Amino acid sequence: MSAALATAIEPSAPVIDADRVRMTYGHGALATPVLHDVSLRIRPGQLVLLTGPSGSGKTTLVSILAGLLRPTAGVVDVCGARITAMSEGELARLRRAHIGFVFQADNLFPALTALANVVEVLCLRGLPRAVAIPRARTILGRVGLADRLGHRPGELSGGQRQRVAVARALASRPDLLIGDEITSALDGATAVEIMTLVRGFVTPTTAAVIVTHDHRLHRFADRIIAMEDGRIVADTTVDCQEPS
Amino acid sequence: MIRIALSSLFFERGKLLAALAGVAFAANLVLVQAGLFFGFQQASTSVISRVGGDLWVMARGTQLVDFADTLSPGVGDVVRAQPCVERARPVIFSWASIRKPSGGIDNVQLIAAEAADGRALPWSLEAGLPSDLRAPMRVAVDAADLERLELPAQAVGAPLELQDRTVHVGVVTHGIRSFTVVPYLFAEPREARRILGLAEGQATFWAVDLADPACAPAVIAGINRHPDLVVRPRAEFEKMTSHYWVIGSGAGATLAFAALLGLIVGLVVVGQTLYSLTEGRSRELATLKAMGASGGELAAFVIWQAGFLAAVGSAVGLLWAAGLKLAVLALGLTVVLDATVIGAGVGAIVAMCALASLASVRKVIKLDAARVFK
Image 1 (tube, rainbow over the protein chains, first blue to last red):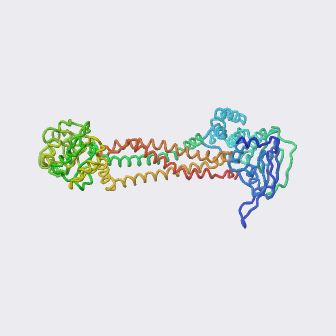
Image 2 (cartoon, rainbow over the protein chains, first blue to last red):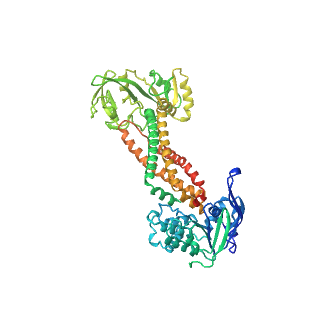
Image 3 (cartoon, one colour):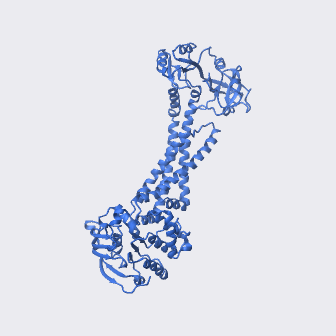
């Protein structure tokens, strides 16, 4: 994160502010519109679930919000910065400084231990190794893997691997956590464990957007946005939530 | 990124070993072929280098040391008459025939010269002393040629029929071989003339030591006025001789081709391994890119792996080449592994690994980070 980018972000601003985002794949006769003027504002302190059937545009929307895909039209601000006007380098620096990712697959390096998988990403984000190691130990302890630090992904269960992935995403203390089907490969109890960790991440200064088909997760959400055919068809604020 | 890169490389031991074997093979082939090339160059010019001198005088038309007409007895005086000539030393380099104890006839090259100050001729003595050649009809034979010449293992004192004269082995040398592997026999100039039937003062070449190297052009011009003589700087004559044998014979091209083949094999093996390692970790690398890793940081994943393979593969290849150098000595072949050859060989391997990594580097830089959501 460059100093210029860091100072451009206002703490009171929405974490995500997307306005009339449109996305079309292909050109001419082959053009396939997948998002139709989607507008969305997510404030700090919210855990938002993005739901909808396959092909409804959830993954495309979350890719745009994460700065991994450029929309055909519309503007997107993340942490107060206009990401639709950023260069690839600026987008990378913004993701590095502000966004944590958890995916359906853990995407851990099989050659590295649980600890090293977290430490190396922290080092890549600019933390000195002397700082990264204790921080990684702490976060892995917090997700219940204090006794699995030296294990490689192949020696961990699916739930443990996903907990390492969550720890990797949270260790850099992002402002925004973006997840895609992070519990779809997990049993019910493990899915609850993972979502409890995510719920615990959301504070008055942070937010999380999780794409999911899993109805079991609704009780963790502050807000559930339903999509269909590239449009937001429902945006529900949930009153009761799972305590963190 | 170095830890991620090297851990991933070590994690896939099969691929690591295959790639290391490829690099080591390529390094070995490049080093040995280059070493043989320089070894052949040394072998073809070893006598010229050893005799030394600033200039060499020879019969006009002479292209290499191995084929030259014998000069008339007065040439030595012509050379000595030139201003600035400090010393003119006769060099006899002549083909001769030998009759073996079994009756067979073989060819040898009989060499005799007054050595330059501080240098012995012959050199690398295994048995006997240079002064032993001062006795009448004594020659030096290389240990590697004893079997070919049907001489006993303890050859000192053994008789030999050379040019229909009986000579005796006074000295045994070690590792003095010609490019053509025709045996070199050394003798004192006086004895060589007797064996070859030459007159006093006759020689094949005259090695000229100048009082001042700056006089060379004047001396060359002075001697070149003689219609039957030509003078060449020693370095030029060495180059002409080695070019004739090493390049003209096709040996150099053959060695270069073998080295190139080694590099191509290494290029393919390393390229495939790096690409396969990158392909296998593309999802994890895309995750790092999504998290904000730059193209340069992702390229470092491949570059560290390529660097490791180049360093370790070159070291193994160098050890392998050093072993082969010792092994082929017994065959009479010299593999030169000096700083130049090692530097050039390692440079070629580093370049090969860099080239092999290009496709993988391009792949990681072009990785689509959005694929992690698919």
